[in-house]
Image (tube, rainbow, N blue to C red; front, side, top):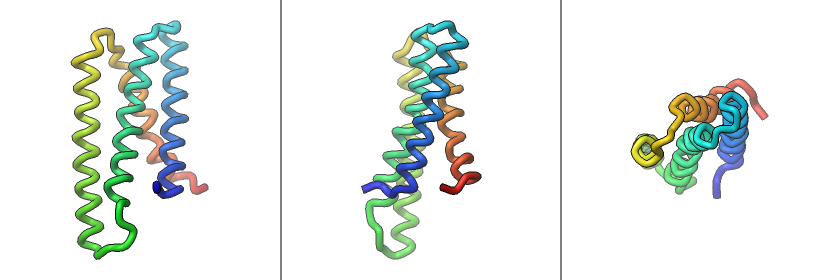
Length: 120
């Protein structure tokens, strides 16, 4: 079970990724590679965030040291997964639009900042 706060954050990341996909579609005149690049960029944030939530919030009640270890492990897995997803995108997607990829990534990452600014 994922925390409702995390669910809202991931939903916001998805919406911002969708906006980045739309912007990349308009700016690239519906070039499929740019649209997919923006989608991969956003997915490189959303999927590691979901994995982080699964690892870090597996146990609700534990000693503070155990909870801190879980968060450190989750952050390490999130970092490695993000790097792996970017590496796979660069290695296997030959017609990659780097601007759209990083645009989707930045749009999805900005959800963390928007979530801090807006409390709902």
